[in-house]
Image 1 (cartoon, rainbow, N blue to C red):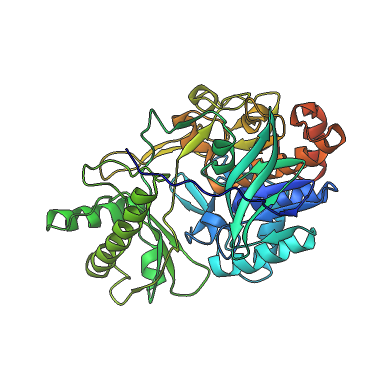
Image 2 (image 1 turned 30 degrees about the vertical axis):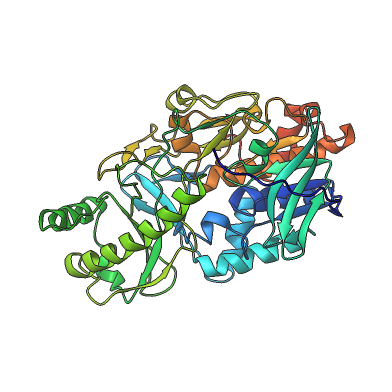
Length: 444
């Protein structure tokens, strides 16, 4: 039995009383905060790290996924609009984003992660969002079905924020779990494998760009045959807007039993970070030796934290199911859309891609953001209410930004009803989203 101590009772000062508190400044959190403030809500955004962007900046993810769909061999169509377009435009003004890049049926929009840190700051400031970095949500206070305060800790100590409505965009659903919400951990406790992302400089990009994913996989399998213990050979190699720089999504982090780390366990998370950096060292050697264009390349940076694909999936009023995705269900209460394939990082060196038919997409129901059993709490991003397999499609940046914009818009709309999120009429929410450029009928 773990030994415990009793903390003395203390009075926690109330740091702020915003209309809307957004916890987590990643893709979904940035969009949620901007949308809530745009709707007239006094909005506060807290982030545990020293910059905004989450996976997009701290992990150094190399491209926006899930923002476009392939219509046919020649045509693409946007699946995500609204605030994502503003983010893309701001990056373009800094020459920090490239046009969509196709790798067979895989499609991404490369961007430069350091510039995104600056752009995120500028964007939330433009909407008047109050931002507090290096601030972690560590506990909640509830009164029946209402979340009345979020307890935070930072360099100033321990304090409370007492908002009218909370949007949990933490990725790991830290607020929802603390408030007593039901959740699942992947598929009966088994989640997708995580990856440590990194960038290499000194790459001959003219040579590297000509390589297909199957060709890179064949080269890495040759390294495996030569004795290199690579955990993954189906990889993502993305050209960066910076000359000679390539982003690599190639690692796969497993515990000594070969299982995914449970990344809401602090000891396992710590070990995953160490294992990831060791794998980066291994892949640097292999790419330099086996992959054309990388002979003189070196690792220039490693993500500040491990790239997490899946942890807690909150139970909402609705659940995005595998059937929704496979059947391309266009639910009438959709607040976001996706055409991203079911991208499963499971056992073995492969990544499984199950693509939707070209030109097809599905809708994310509004109830997937509404936390069951709580009146004034929404989720947005990869901690939405979804089945494990469906989550493999909806967890990428594009849909997360769209979900964040929907959550922030709905939060502002709910203030007239005291923050009761179920008071929001879905048709009115959809109308507001469309009026701001959000896409709810891709290709239409």
